[in-house]
Amino acid sequence: MIPTKRDEDDLKLLLDVLPPRIKSAVESCKKLSEMIEVVLDLGKLAEVRFLSDVLYVKSGTVTQDDIDYVTSKVGEFTSDNRAGIERTLHRISAIRNRQGKIVGLTCRVGKAIIGTIDIIRDIIESNKNILFLGPPGIGKTTKLREAARVLSDEFKKRVIVVDTSNEIGGDGDIPHPGIGLARRMQVASPDMQHKVMTEAVENHMPEVVIIDEIGTEAEASAARTIAERGVQLVGTAHGIFIDNILKNPTLSDLVGGVQTVILGDEEAKRRHTQKAILERKAPPTFDIAIEIREKDKFAIYIDVAGAVDKLLRGVEPRPEIRVRTTGGKVEVKKAPPEMPELTLEEEVKAKEQKVREKVRMYPFGVNRTAVDRAIRAMQLPAEVVGSPDDADIVLTIKSKARPNSKIVQIADEHNVQIHVIRKNTAVQVNKFLKYYFRVGGGDEAEEIAKREAEEAIEKVIQTNKSVDLSPQNAYIRRLQHQMVDKKNLHSESVGEEPKRRIRIYPR
Image (cartoon, rainbow, N blue to C red; front, side):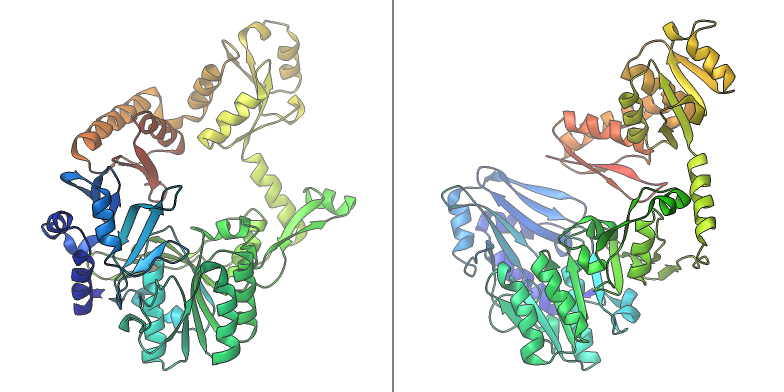
């Protein structure tokens, strides 16, 4: 992926709108090409944000004159508080106070990067409807822009970009060359986006429509209308994973929607399920979903309908994973082959087996809610049951477990193990569960992880740079998050299991 010469020239235009002292500090940065955005908030130090670092401009806090200097040099702010620089891809977003005065700015760098979709080029060329998902700043809009260029320039398709806030095609009436020969339809305000989507199809006969940030029910409906007219749709939506879209009632139609089906008593009993079950409502608007996990890592669901059906049955779908290595090589991990569809009897047996794999725990004299909460917090393979008949183990307290006591007799009758804790407290429950399931390798591993977090927190405070901790299980990561929160810092979990870890950010 190679930034174009035009991007270098455009970056100078963004620097030119910054106050001179801030511009000077930014220009002196060694990693200028990796800059993502400049943040100016009244009364705070200016921030220069990079892919994995933040630089603070120490020459003084941001003043109202600094903010006014920038706003005087950019285009007009629209109703969504965004502005731009003529014929560039940069985006200037404003924060206003209660009186409407601008007191903060986010000056985001926009780049047209050639080659950013090479890793998924075959999918872009497939004529199928494609939905990109991922967190903000991961590069969804950049990939839409490159898709517009490839489809219009190299495949000579009639492409229309519905460009809310001019984020794909840049500010001004003449679109940025980054979208190639694609035509661009501007949107007066975000609440008009769905109307412009429909207008694009009705008035201009496109073969491809590209749309960023589908976020409302009206936009989801317009997307379905476009797809049903045989026009290829390439877009993004407000979500990180495909199940985020499925659980969002506003956007679930993009992946087929969800409906509740009521089974008869006999059928529910036969399936070992509740009478009300969830099923996919309709064919999905988008055929393919691509989760952008990292900058050059994609999880691809070639069959969205099949993935949604699995999710609704409680089965985790397995996407194809594509990664571009540091050497530029593309590694592909194909999705495992689909297993033959199970008969109803086989599916019931599989569910019963899955239940049996969990440790069934019956609390006696111990707070059920505390046990259940601890199991969920540590993500343990266990569940709380309401009867010793259904239990693998009984958890009780010392005062209830005297010889010949009721619970001891019941446990003996059912041939169930009985485990005793001293008191009915959350601390005692957690300690037992950690011991029983060997969570975190014991107290020693937990203490080591805590010390590592303490040292990392101190380093972040001293250096103002983010720090990654060693990979840990969900329970220890939760403890580390709590430690970070107490220091008023920000943290998030990054990476995939078994290498998922905490990343700590400065204030």
